[in-house]
Amino acid sequence: MAAAAGGGSCFVLGASGQTGRALLRELLARRLFARVTLVGRRRLSLGEEAEAAVEQAVVDFERLSEHAAAFQGHDVGFCCLGTTRAEAGEAGFVRVDRDYVVQAAELARAGGCRHFVLQSSRGANRHSGFLYLRVKPPTSARLPAVCQHLALRPPGWTWCPLERPVAVSVMVARVRCCLTGEVEDLVQAVGFDHCTIFRPAVLLCKREESRPAEWVAQKFLGVVARVFPTAYSVPVETVARAMVAIVLQPGEGKVEVLENKTIHELGKAVPQQGT
Image 1 (cartoon, rainbow, N blue to C red):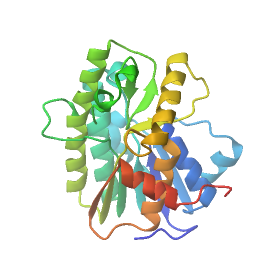
Image 2: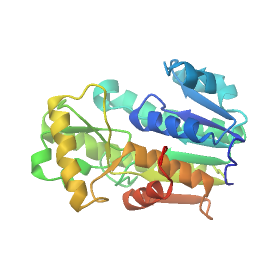
Image 3: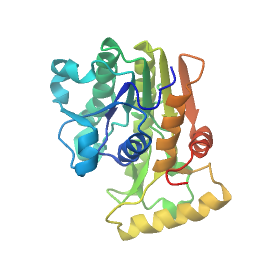
Image 4: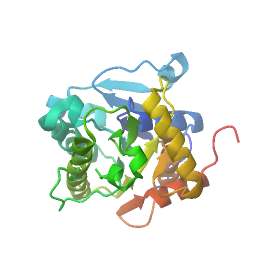
């Protein structure tokens, strides 16, 4: 189902994250849906104009089945939900990146959602012996050694300051990939008319408060991207535009998995706002 400009309804999970915010900006600027609902644990401060254009459903993810109404009547669901093991602990990480996502998908399908767009991560593999590659990928292990003093965080990857020694950070990255692969399988099994899975590499974004280590990493990857534009990274704005593109013109199959290079291509196919 291709979304008609200005019609239909969608919801966004994870709108407080970098990709979620970029996606929300795209949705509002292009006016693709008559109704946009943000589903989260708290209300977001979006500014007067944006807040007037969206609905916000505050839910308790530990009792998500009690909030089925938040998922009723939407044509498309976008899921950019994720956390880090450092923030939530191992058990909390699994709940957020797997349980909450799958429960939300089930409620959305029961509520009539036909197209579910899931932000996963490169390298997702449910058969991996590591928890993140059954939930998101060890991209840091593939990057040049000069960058490995930095940690990465989901969904996908965004650069952040060092949270723990490199060996532990890389292990956490591998742990995520196995969990992400498991989530992909569980979401596909829900039975949407269309299910699109995004597997971006390192997510690049501009933060309001840029820390020195993060600034160095962003600059380094900016240089790398000039030589290998689709190999190691992708701007969150590109991911957001690609999500818009796939909703406007979904693939023919029930399930479509988009790797980093395809995300770049789709993101470029949709004109940037103001151009």
